[in-house]
Length: 74
Length: 455
Image: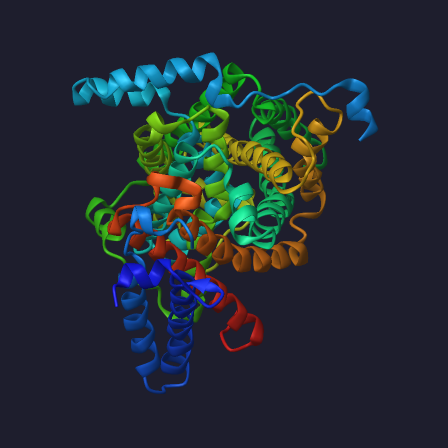
């Protein structure tokens, strides 16, 4: 599916960008939670790495610009 | 409102249609055809809202965090103000796009496209209006302290309970002049006053580091290469410092500064220029100077100074001249006053944009709204009301990311910006990095309140 089309069209109540922003927030949350697990409790750094990788991926997707004619009805 | 109907409030003209704004627009059109040096000088002449923003950012909060980081970590944390403002600059560029791409103000647009919770409530009332009142307490606490110390240097024993009046005398007239927004000359005058205050800060803190000395290689390394502070306390300090230089109040102030100046589609390059040269550059320089001064004065010593007296005492060992001490206090006062003006302006504009109250500079309530943050004079007597500040900081960290997400969506929404919608992947990525920082700040704050992360 075309990424820009997914981001700027409605899926249920919201456009794709809103869902991706929620996902970005979740991955952002993994970063400090993972840091606490790793640095304070000497647990696996997996959550921290997942948070960083997910954040980068979400930013890459969300940075896709809107196509000027396609956002009129969203 | 019966009072309004009796007095017939004046219709405020959109500043972008004033004679001066139209002239400026034509001048900018011509300026684009000029060689780069002439263009640069032309933009310097017209800059203003960026300096307002810098003056606002350079307040008690950012000053205290720079002192703390300098005293605790030496040159290593100099990158924080530079990087945090550099990411924040994407939000300022977005604010510029909103002003130049649409006549609808951003809070109104948030209300219309995302709901009143995101616009009037989150951005307007909580993150700007209430916060601007609460944060003034800290400015008065530090400012009156610096004034009392200054008076003592020249042999006048004037207590804090009196010295705060000087802060009122300077900040109130300038706040009212800028807050009315109806007179472009008055707006320009205040912007020039802000430039002078920033000049004073640069001069004074620059002179201080001339005396304390500077380790140039360490400075360059500290500025450019990010290094995380050790331990949880350091991480918390890092997050606190980053939020002191980046936040929704800064974006709204910059946005409204441009509206007051009548920015329209020809002004976008000027807005970006202003955000960099008027905002990023002075903020980074001044906060770096402060950090360096305390890195030199405090290196290896236990404890971190908090009051302006303690700050100066810490420097007295390395600053022999009484004039430098006087200058140091004047620098703090300039820093505090400029922030107080910014807080008053933010308070008024966010109030009008979030409520249905008409913005009428001639109305009886207008000075009350503009000067509402002046209640912070109580800070001179009681210091910062810690619990209120903590509560508002918590609410602000929550609403910072809510507003950030809403602004990103507006920047990508053709219903608001039409063809001026963001078309650059780089621009969007910068905004999203900024939002991620705000998200992480909020989550960390919640974790510290839950006891998961040490406070």
